[in-house]
Image (tube, rainbow, N blue to C red; front, side, top):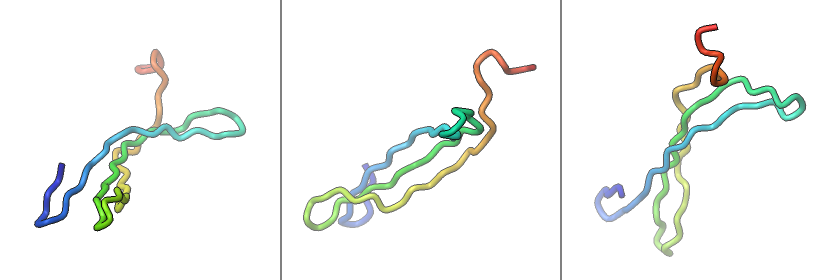
Length: 65
């Protein structure tokens, strides 16, 4: 939980895999962070999405080839 003055918020970190829909070929992977805050009505609102750590995707067993 984040607190800044009277505002409270949440963070959520995950990874995403980038793939072509037509071919099913996956090209890269990245991490992303979503920042949420609670508005005055008590609803959670996503305020930011930050992506980082972009790199090529390597299937298990293909490392070192």
